[in-house]
Image 1 (cartoon, helix red, strand yellow):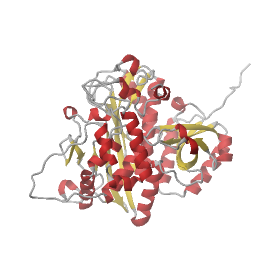
Image 2 (cartoon, rainbow, N blue to C red):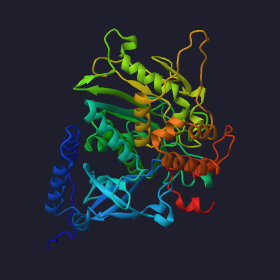
Image 3 (tube, rainbow, N blue to C red):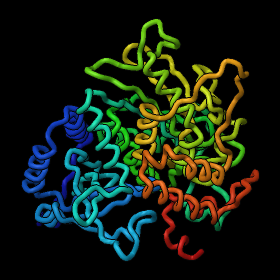
Image 4 (cartoon, rainbow, N blue to C red):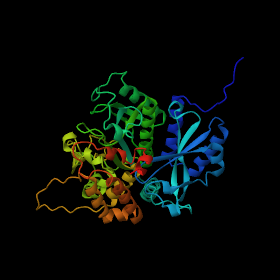
Length: 478
């Protein structure tokens, strides 16, 4: 006698997923009213019986993604009254004032590949609010959204961005969490740059993750093994900055989930292994208005406009103040090593990969600047907010032709970066005193649990207490 399955949860083919996610992405680009999209999404959730839960995610001060699964029926009834305990999140509210609200950002809605995330779920980003419903000062996603909205309303300017995110694949589950026991990471492949046999574990991971990434509307461009053993990069097209920031979080979540399903670990530590190239998150930026790339100028120096050079010079003038946000971990300062194409020089160049900012070859459509000094463990919302505010409003150094130019360098350890960040009046004014203090505080808490002198060997504590490693239990054992 035939049996009827006990469960019937939503599973959508990859080609249909891509269509759905690209349509949702286009609605965001077209700035369709959030209220209209909210009505569409809630109607969809109510009618689609095969969805069991909605994953609502938010990002903390340091950039770590947090997720809560809400029963679909409960969410439909209570989406305007979601709360969570903020005191359990490092850098968020204190115990005496712990309850925070979570507002659903309905345009930032994603259909998920069921073979990776499980059937019957969809994902949506949320924004953290105070108890009275006002934006929470430590939620940089909401801060970035508000600022870009103001910029567009004022003069129609849009920030376009794309990230090139590198990562490592290591053997075994939770390799980072167990590093203090093993003292080493084990490569899954030693094939080399651009080369890996089609069936080896690294290529299998890249192929699986890239297909899921495409299905989630990333608009893939290319993917390949990177320079270091077991290292990967999966590139995708640029997008408006709020979408680009969300994609950073999804990229890392997706990579970790795919790797875990294959019995491996995807790591975005900036320098997990000494002696080989580290992981970067090269960040491409341009401004546009009315469909015109404001960073392009025919005949301009390196093909860039005066506005692009002004933006670049402001970033360089404030590079040391920005450094802690772009490189927010103890381990990040191992990557800023000049022996491994490290972008630790505070200068701009079309060719020198040791420069903090590079000018890629471009045309009227693609002219941009590439900030190379950013680590993949940075909070994407914070870095874009800081880079945008600094590039447009930051103090700029006056040129003194009487002095010989000298090469300036980024800090080579987190303690110097914290000191420079804390002493920056511009950053305090830009971020607000409360967030400025909170960010420095959580970074110092991490730094003080790790060696002050990095040395040549990666220490267990810089892995164990890294903000992206899921080891809350180990933190509490300190």
